[in-house]
Amino acid sequence: MATPQAGQAQVILNTERFQMAEVEGFHLNADLSGSVQRGNRKLLNVSSSGIVGYSHARHWPRVIFGGRFLRDDTRSILDQQYIQVRYSYLLAPRAQTFHFVQAQKNETLLLRSRWLVGTGLRWTFAETDQLLVAAGTGVMGEWERLDPERVGPEDAVDLDAVRMANLGVVQWTFASGARLVNITYVQPDLSRFSDLRLLNDLGLSAPVTDWARLTGSLEWRRDTRPPSTLERDDLSIRLGLSLNIS
Image 1 (cartoon, rainbow, N blue to C red):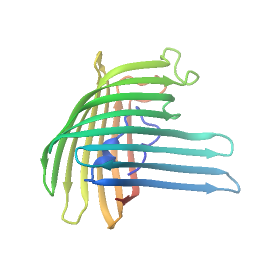
Image 2 (image 1 turned 135 degrees about the vertical axis):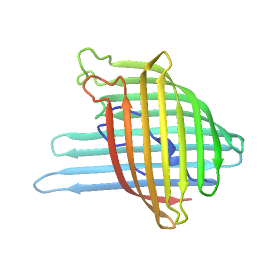
Image 3 (image 1 turned 135 degrees about the horizontal axis):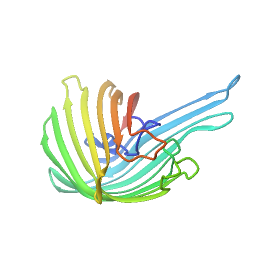
């Protein structure tokens, strides 16, 4: 797992990626990395992402967090952080609610702040040792504040919307323990369906040890109405190492 990459056309966070494993009791899954360069060039690169929570009976509260900071000796190149507080209640073995509050900042996306408050239902349609198929739908309020010095002259700085929060998950587990996962988010503005945000993340992870996995993913994002200084589409590739303590 890794933090969402910089330069994306829009700001959907793929938090579902952090919630694929079955957990019971206390659990922690985190990725931490950093590097420092000194000499002809000064460079600081720090990133983190993860989830911590407690699952018991029908209740599952958790906190999903992450960020990346990249700076040289003259300026900040990347500065992005997010945190989501999420709670689910198990209605039935294959049905649960989800409720969340999220705060986010991303200099690359001109985003000084983004707040989300949402609620919905998630169903699991198929769940075997090899196959998982799940989907969810809900509604969320969204409040964004953009950097007024970096958006176009015709762009609004303060934005708010009520969006649908739709998601779909398909996972296939191989006999070796490797997992192939496809996660899709669809978030239209309920007052203007032409304002649409999409994310599709195709990922593969393979075990290295009992507590470590190699991960990689191909992620496509689209925002039909981004600020005029950003692109509508973004494609990113991630490779990483995931540590799991539970």
